[in-house]
Amino acid sequence: MLTKEKIAETYQAIQDEITEGLEELDGKSSFKQEIWHREGGGGGRTRIIQHGNIIEKGGVNFSAVEGKLPESIKRAFAVDDDDFFATGISIVIHPENPWIPIIHMNVRYFELNEQIRWFGGGIDLTPHYVIEDDARFFHRSMKDVCDRHHPDFYRDFKSWADNYFFIKHRQETRGIGGVFYDKLNPEKTGLSEEQLFLFSCDLARTFLPTYSKIVDQNRSKPYTAEEKEWQFLRRGRYVEFNLVYDSGTRFGLETNGRIESILMSLPAQANWAYDFKPRPNSLEEKTLSLLKKDINWIT
Image (tube, rainbow, N blue to C red; front, side):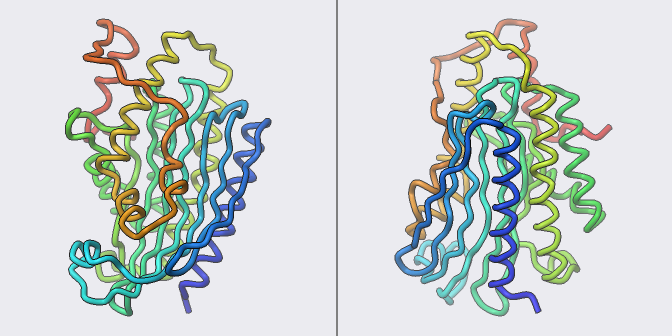
């Protein structure tokens, strides 16, 4: 029988696998861990890596929290019950080299009662410079893992990611998307809770080999001061999305989550330039032209 304890235990093990793999990939820095406890119930393990060969700042966090839902969340979920349990892993990696993309992953499980139990998550890529071969490889990797579990998952979750990771006030996507899903349960998918759990674990374990290959393709590329400045501007867009639109950030803040863990997704440095316009026919202009919904990266 699938229990919340088994889900949390497995997610902790995946956190261990990913942090070990990222340390090996970086080759210099290591994760610092902080164990924290949440007032009201539960806690987590925050792991942060900084100043590495590859990773300027990154976090791989695990949490398993419980307690009372705030009234605002109850209204949003249209429920009367308020005793909740939530567990998951959240990852954001900000690389030093602008040719290596930012990557985000999240898998989570939420339980309110016997009727309200669901899985959410996804992986998305935010290149500072869109490299089309990398984008195609990334999306093929996401499609492969989705296809192992349901024939419609990649199509549906890719579209969901395009729409979710959209910066409305900029009219551009945060990056090249990926897959995103929320509130998946047997009724919506035809899969059992055990099958949905196995999908979430399979997706999470796709993170490390997929990102490692993209890093290794680009880690030795030289970059200029101008390209570094562009990276800071793209990070600014990332910050705007997370602070304005990201539902996980809002949920964490509204349920009295640990602020350092919630905001670990923000980069060490991001810039904003007034009315920046890329040079015509530049790589920066090309990247902006590819930050659109509904691009088919598979064919």
